[in-house]
Image (cartoon, rainbow, N blue to C red):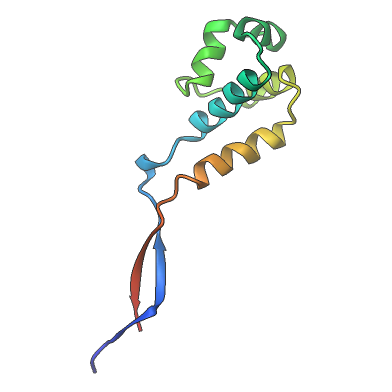
Length: 106
């Protein structure tokens, strides 16, 4: 029996894991974007979060993988619910999915 490919049947191919940002990178982007949007200095947010400015910078750049307690502390310093930070980070990861479609054999 021959197999035919119906052009109407397609599957999405997800990006390779290395193509998507890591969770720590996405969370850092949310923190940095929020801080910049509010025109806040890194030293002021770091002080309120009880972390060093250097550490906050590393978190924002996705270099450090912050613990849940640190995420909570920085979120609080930025007056953001942690659930919003995680939701925004997940969206950033999802938007990096590849929109590549392959036909599925019928």
